[in-house]
Structure formats: structure tokens, C-alpha cells
Image 1 (cartoon, rainbow, N blue to C red):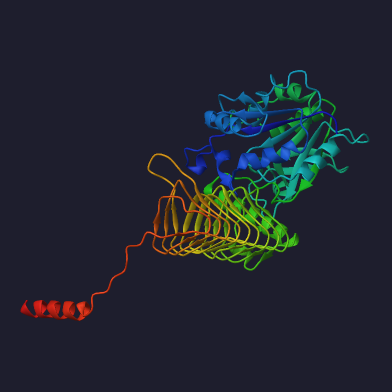
Image 2 (cartoon, rainbow, N blue to C red):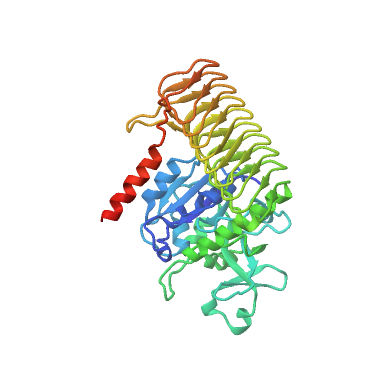
Length: 452
């Protein structure tokens, strides 16, 4: 396709979001919407990426600096329209004569395949258009700008709804705003834009007329309405989340994952689940989760930053936090929380426990109500539980502490010193019995109550 540059517009204030956070940094599936788009752009192999920033640019600069993207920044101090925004990229693209794809940071779902179709259309040797505009057939065209085609199928003009005739408003082919432009002509045409309109702005849509006046022409590539979904409000954000989840659920099931009640399962952008995993209703996946084949994630579990081995079982009502590594055939039961802990093959933490900053050996069994006391208010410490060790119910393991392979810890113990391999560790006081105490106690209390 030749040399490609991407210009992404993200200078708008996003006032309808009613948020201190920049609009394009709001999350969809655990990732800022801008990053969804930039991930796709990376697949094009662009030689340059220019991000047009304005209001809230410090937030964008910080976010990009903390991510794996190589975008240059161009600042639009005044918001004078989309055409004006692209003008700000002139310095970054000085001397560039390849194809420039212009995108919007609040339109996160445009697929790589659609971008490639636009670039292929731009480089059609028989047609040689100067501009390729991305259009879509809208179910409800409403206030969208319309794409008016000539008899030979070229794009004749883009008409804003307010300026359209009744005949033009009947057109269902709408303008997404995104386009590919000849980089050698882009800034020449941009300088010919006029702001002689009610808003006093330079519109990118007028670029088609500038190209045609220069002897070039424009064509249209079509996308689905969902591909060009924009996010301008909280309601749009919720709709975008739903669109992502619906697509991801379908992809998961097509790849061999069982979703018992798909509409109640939520995935992150980077969730990886292998075939033959079963996911029960009401499961939430945060970022960075990998589930191996044959595992079962039971209802009402919350997972993030974790890996789950083959044929493992998690839940119901389990919480796996970042750093949890659940081994093959291991079991995490109901109301168990695991954080920054590695559980070996076949290890079991069946119910009502907290395991944090720990290593649990193969086939170890952790009894109900066990906790690793990993924090002293200032520092975190590690607990090590050996292979085939047995930890009795209601045990507190005060880290740093090691329980040896095959060792047993008696129920109700507070363990603050290491326990050797195959030893018994127990800290309970010796049980004693006082015969007749209960009957005497009841009698005395009843007599006292009657006196009142």
C-alpha cells in the first residue's frame, strides 16, 4: 500500500461526557477508547502517527507516555473545525507524500480490514482518487451528513443535513468523517478551505470540493454502522461497551468457549480464553486474564491480572486479583480471594479464605477461613506452603512464614514460625471441661433476671 501516515483527531472538549477525564480516555472493556483505535492503526504499519490534541492534552500525553505507542503530538489551541484540526499536523508531516488516513479518537471500533479497503481504494491504479471517504448506511440517517454520488459512482459532494435538500436527505449513505487523502496534496487543499459559514469553522468535509476543483476526484468505501460508532456521551459509552461485549462473546463461543448465559459475562479487551473452558453466568473479566483449556469459571466470580491452568476450577463467588497464578487442576472455591499468589497443580482453597503474597505447593489443601497475614501496615511479606501440606480451618499464617512439604497445621492456629516438613504445627490452648458449669450458669442467670 506504500507509505502511510495516520492523523487522529482528539482535540475536542467532549462536554457531553460531563467529565474531568478526557473523552477518549474513557474505558471500553478495560481500555481507553483511544487505545482501541491506536491498536488497530498499529496493524497498518504506519511510518507516522500524529495525534491532534487540545483541551486536556496533558492527560493524553501522560496516557500515551505510559503505553506502547509512538505517536507525535500536534496541538490545536483553538477548536476551529475538523479541517483546522488536520492543519495542525502539517509540521509533523512536512515532506510526507504518502497516504494520510484521518481518523477520530472517539470512533474506536473501525476495523483494520476497513482501513485497508480505504487504502486499497486510494491506490487503485485504474481510478487514482485523491480522496477516499468512509461512508455507511445508517438505519436512522437523522442528522448525519449525506454522501452524494455521481452517475459514475464517484463522490460528488458531502452535504450537511442542515444544508441538504429533501432529495438529498432521502439518501441513506452517510458520512463517517474518516478519509484517506493524498499526502502530497493534503495541506494544499486544506489551505483552500473556507470558514465562511454559520459556525466560522473549517470543515474537513469541504476537502472533497477542493480536490475536485484541483482536477482530482473522490470515491467512497462503505463500512457497517457499528464499525463507525462514535462516542460522545455516557449513553454512547454504554452502547459502545455493549457492542464490544456482544462481539467478544460471539468470538469466544466461535472459538470453543462455553458461555452458559452470554449476556451476563463481561470481557476485557485483552481477555484470552482457550477452547473447552466453561464460563457460568455473571462472571467479570478485568484486564490481563488468560484461562487455559478445560477450566471452569463458576458464577459471580471476578478475575483480573491472573492466569488459570488447565482443568482448574474457580468459584462461585471467587475474586482473583493481579498476580494470581492458578495451577492445572487447582481449585479456588466460593468466597475465596487470591492476590499475587501462585498455586501449584491440584492445590485447593475451597472456601472463605484470603491467600495473598504466597506460594502454595502442588496438592496442598487450605482449610476454610484461612488467611495469610501478609501486611504489617508498612510492608508486604510472603507465605510459603509446601507440597501436600494441610492447613486446618480458621488458620492465620503470619508472614513471613514457611510451612514445609506434607506438614499439617491444626485448625484455629496462629502460625508465626516456620513448620518443618511432615511436622504438625498447632497453637491452640489445651481444651478443658468443667462438668455441670452450663446448667449452673443458666440457673444463676435466670434467677437474676427474675429479680429484675
